[in-house]
Image 1 (cartoon, each protein chain N blue to C red):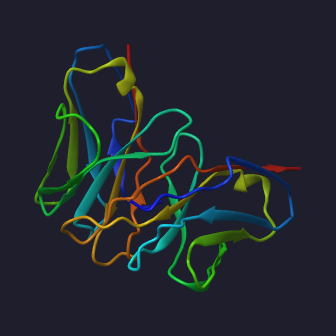
Image 2: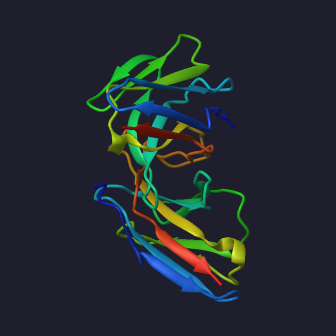
Length: 114
Length: 114
């Protein structure tokens, strides 16, 4: 158990809809990263939030957006869902107290877009 | 961007030692090498991290030669529950913040047979 929680566990949406995924970081961690993992592939970095500001972004379109709150929890929002957005979405937290470059992952949210 | 190359899959038998080698020819001076383990439909789990020479913890050992262009994860006496995907990562710097973007490859699927 890493102390990182995500909700919901599973989600089914239809193409064109919007979705919000939530993540609570491990206590003491001020940085949250989001990853998308398609079936059979490694996780792909979406973006990272550090002290409530976006702190880096991968190769994802603007319809992927996020927020980080004062308690360091975070949301991932995806607008205009496409079939290819079906994936496991992972949240990872880290902070000054963690080993360098070490991120602690939550269990993920499985999103299915029909 | 420091890319990594590792075997797609490996098979082993219970009780054997397993060594998974990762190549990272373009590793930067400040980069650390981190290995994660992932079971199906779960988030990756941190195994071990190192910068140079040898690191050992209760789960695994990590061997890094002097040129740091490769690393080897060693799992002693594997069991069936070690069947998972193993990722080798090299830390990528981002412009600010205390944590770093993780770049996952496709990983190595380790299958432990009885």
